[in-house]
Image (tube, rainbow, N blue to C red; front, side):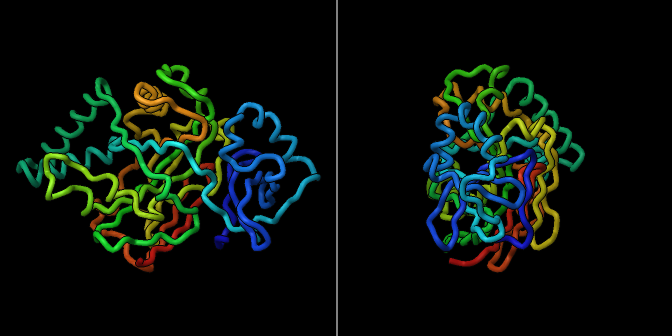
Length: 321
């Protein structure tokens, strides 16, 4: 259990928990109490298979004194869901991408800082008007809990944080129009898409480009949670604060307003290629302030503390393999 209890927006949230007396179980969180739902549904993923029906039942279950209730303090908080697909958006925050492009223009092309930033901002404005998102797949095996240790793999040295707003799909769909896309969002959670920067490009296969599998999918490289907070309790997801502290120092602190492609455009885009199913997880990109920006990377003993408005917080200690 973390040092401080995670809070959440709205009257209840969902999660997956464990205690000393039993294995993992799906739970309904109300403040510092958790109702065991295992007698009603085997997992949070199964609950999402009939999301609309469950969403109408959950308020009564949260208010009822019946059932088995636990004190949140005595439970281990696990990753809230075992998702289907994990769809990850890259280069989706304007300031972040402008910083990256401007740095390259200075170092590679010899542009002045003013010229480099002006060119980068122009590129991003054009991308917003006529571009499309950049999305790739992640592995569910990389997932760990919001308070678990992050274990650094033996290969690579530039292990970096990327805090992101993630959403969970609650309705199946393909070729979804942007104006209807938010109807497909069941809930939101926090995701930290950790990346080994010096394993991102393959020097032996330059023509192929990035190696997302090696760089992003090590075990424990995707802390999720603590909870799934129903979308109705979050309000406008384009006005949430994303904050990450590394050893107590604020490294990322940005609004989701800085997204290049908002959630409806992301959902519309990915659904042109793949059918979205209940329980799929979509990460919406990471804002400026990664370790590569600061020239600081994760080392054993480091602590990452992360939070997003209304979704609680994470605290992960880093250790070696």
